[in-house]
Length: 185
Image 1 (cartoon, helix red, strand yellow):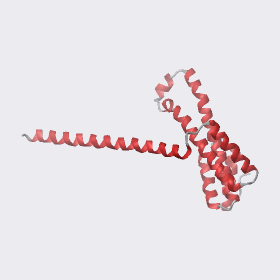
Image 2 (tube, one colour):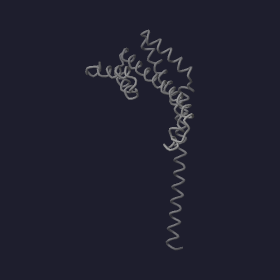
Image 3 (tube, helix red, strand yellow):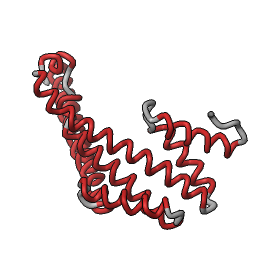
Image 4 (tube, rainbow, N blue to C red):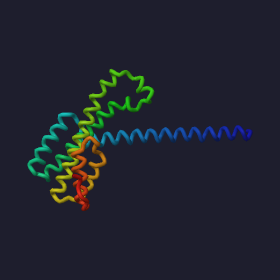
């Protein structure tokens, strides 16, 4: 067999092996991603608007009554379920957001208008999540869990929207107070 034939055969085996390994890696990634969804479903179930509203009502009632220890867990449930539902709604919009700019530009205006209500709902749920996380930080602080509160204030500031001025200022001021810096007025 000539050197060129051996080289082509060897390269073919390397290519075949690489494609096989890549295929296995993709299969493992897909399985891993499914495991992530499965774990979330096991922890929270399939969230829905009614469940988020129930968590919200319970959490706000406990928080407003000053029952911070019980409110902390209820606020976590509310924030996490609102976040999960917002993410699910956003996943329904992913084909639009994942499209190329050209494809989005060619997409009919009436169809874009149809999607706006869903984006608004996802954003409302994210705002609820932000409120729940802020109030959870406040509750943690009230029950003496300063380090957890500190970390959660930081998380709120990472996710809060520029449009959520009051929440932004409250979280930043609480964080500043904890480190001896003058709060925002």
